[in-house]
Image 1 (cartoon, rainbow, N blue to C red):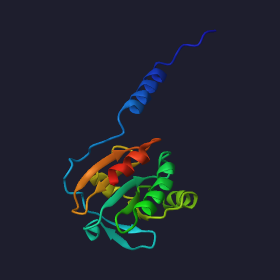
Image 2 (cartoon, helix red, strand yellow):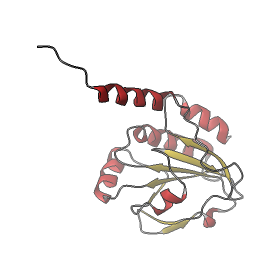
Image 3 (cartoon, rainbow, N blue to C red):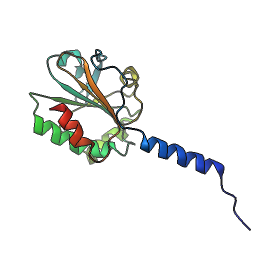
Length: 165
């Protein structure tokens, strides 16, 4: 008895290959556009707004507990925050999990040396028109978008840090 190939398997493999080959750089907004403001709670229940950070450069990263590449971004963002310093860069990681327990477990496994915010309803993620996880945005001290980046692959950290500097 011979097995027939499933045509959906080939289609799925082609789509995965295409997604892998697409560039990781994603321009959701144009450079210089005002970054959408937000008001999100941190782990202590304090509200953080983008407007309150005006005058500071902000690295805004959206993540989820189920996101494989997000496991790589957390150690990198810890190092980034230490290397550049709190006085020159504010790293904010916005969690989009609907289940707070999933986010808490992720954070137990991958501690954050930067501010973690929670967007369980996804309103802020929608305003930033996320195309995938993780998605990051550099927001200048003037509140305008400098660049955006989709995903995180080996070597991205060095390129992103060079762009930050």
